[in-house]
Length: 117
Image 1 (spheres, rainbow, N blue to C red):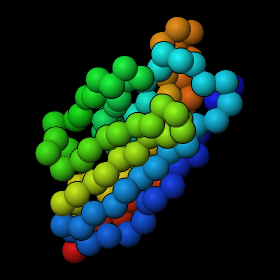
Image 2 (cartoon, rainbow, N blue to C red):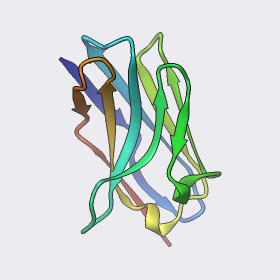
Image 3 (spheres, rainbow, N blue to C red):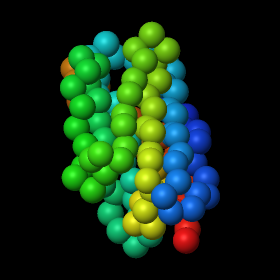
């Protein structure tokens, strides 16, 4: 089992920045994808950014150039630096880990990000 704990959400004005962090613990597979998804109010959960244990990253078009995902394999953490935040970035952000060998998916509890005028 893998446990994921997110931190760093909050309220920020449009144009501001926030940094989300996710710490993984437990039986962490050596080959995995870690990433961030978000669920805006009234909408489905969607990919924000993902990083493979080998370093390959993927971003949603809506956040390219504004968000940066990074991971530290020695500490089993993944971070999301969010700059130039927009109102439409308001959502609950979830950390996710995908086990590339078993296909298992793990989710964090979510952290609220609210962008205001």
